[in-house]
Image 1 (tube, each protein chain N blue to C red):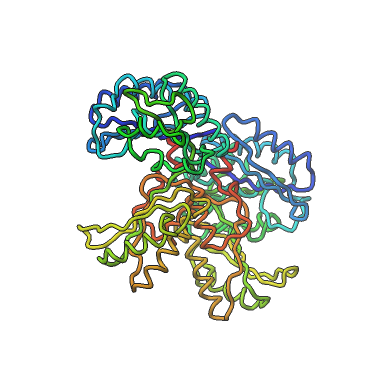
Image 2: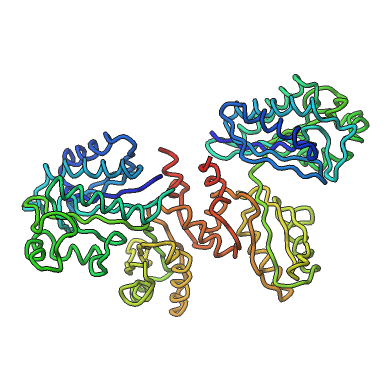
Length: 297
Length: 297
């Protein structure tokens, strides 16, 4: 069983504090720290770790222990919106584990954090039973500075823990989601209006696909524009459908696609899905992929 | 390091003999027998095993030991052409191993077999330095019954072992090749002439792609026709290029593609290659595939 967990922590300027959190994660048996990186202007660090359910739960608790000791939101400044010392903790199913099991893990870990550190916890995305609280942006609106007032309203009682913010550590948002694919399509034009119109056409917030977030940008140095996207559920809104839609929308303005790019990691099933679509593959099964077959041994 | 090895043995009618060979392979440490199957009309069995270089070499020698003891080509009858008791042994690079290392392994194993069992060995495909002896069909032409006469000519001196056939076990063909993809494209027509013309257009033997073998067939029960292919090097002749060429050739007859199918296994890199092509992905690297990244840990 392999679960990915990507805790976002509100510290990106003190390397020794971040390194101590990384060490705390590394010491947990059965967990691998894949990567971590800090952004000073955001004053924020992102950890990527993998392991089984028991391992990643223990690693998240170890990370909280250091963060609650070392981070004080009352003096924290940074460009990125945040609610707490450990701000967001998503669990992502990778292999041999269902979304339902990741939801259960998010609830178990959220309850443990609230109990142990007296930090209020909100569940989000797939782990939230409340449609008004699935979206991270909605939960985080008002940030740490507005949290006490927000929590005083009935609708923002936390899922676990005290009804008021932790004095220095704020609150945490814990949940489960599908692997996210960061995907950009570059257009053979410098017309930013075209990129923005296409982004609006495909993103959920303005009527597009359910699992697409998108914005149009200028790539000044190259004299072209980009539709920059997050695909938040590649099974339900697959990458090839997004690509074909962007291509068709661009053609309406006489613009063609120059290239696309995957930023960071992509699950092999998302690539296989694109191959299946374009090659019109019938009856293809994941265990026909040689590497999957070998892993089953 | 993971090498696949697919020995083809000239016995498909005595299950106890085949099972004894499977057991011999299974007893080798570090080797997994993925699959084996027998065909009675071909009177032939195919074993698929994986392991590191030392393991698969040892497994092939264990298989030879049983085959040389149990199989006599002088009384062997079957539809499939064959030269020896263990007829063909290809080594295939899967992960963490180069083609050059598989070529070296084929030579080492071929020499060991010749020395130990006094069976002459021909190298083929990537392992052969002689262009006239790369092709399995050329080496096997004349079969076991014509082998003594063939070996009497200077050009068919074996790469290893005695200059005459083993009395009961004939000769063996050992080599290295890329993973083979069995790929069929079904056309939305019952016109067998269209399938045959397209097969001729795309296969190497009649002027098509270097690494494609193809034939046209009727699928009587479905009232359609099929272009049935073996893709013998998906890196140099990729699946998407074959698909697009078949689509274009079919359009010339007013015929469209109904569907395609992968028979058996396909390396994930072949699927990723198709996704890269159709999504116009730039700068994509194998270690961006989440599962590859995790395997590197």
